[in-house]
Image (cartoon, rainbow, N blue to C red):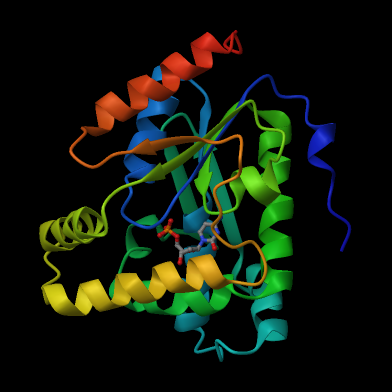
Length: 234
Ligand code: DC
């Protein structure tokens, strides 16, 4: 499948935020989006939407060719705006269902397939072609928008990342044992880093921000200041 080159992009500003699970990417990216007015794109939610569709349809997660036909069969679509990114299956808004442990477990397999990634990358570039974006994920600076104006690699201590995820689940009423979550997150980190296509990498020109002990607002303001320094804001 042909993918449009990211250099065809006409948008003024693209902020790419990559990093491991629990580094605070979503919270920070939403905040940056609210502060700048740029569109927020949660690429993890795109992979999660496909994983949820596969679970609902009981599609074998090892069969890439079946996964590839799912977006059309299930009417997988996305709506984006400042500070909001929603995922739909047909007319159903499934955004709130994307962070269950079941989806956490399934998304690893889904995101590992090269053709699935190619499809997602194509959609992600299309979004960035028409809007200023704050896009977060794993391969944004390395693959999706390699010429993004601002590239951030957001990380945090492993223990802190597990704690954030655990807190998020407790708040949603999901009772998950700490050690299980720790194991699952370590496995997801490993899959992210060792994936053959689109692995999580820190590109050389990314600014590294460690969010351990920092509030999301502090991190978001650092990113907005970086944008201003680079004189890329309108
Ligand atoms: O950021 P997240 O936890 O919502 O991401 C969900 C999964 O999707 C995670 O296992 C990594 C994968 N992912 C990816 O492979 N590439 C991206 N650009 C974003 C997410």
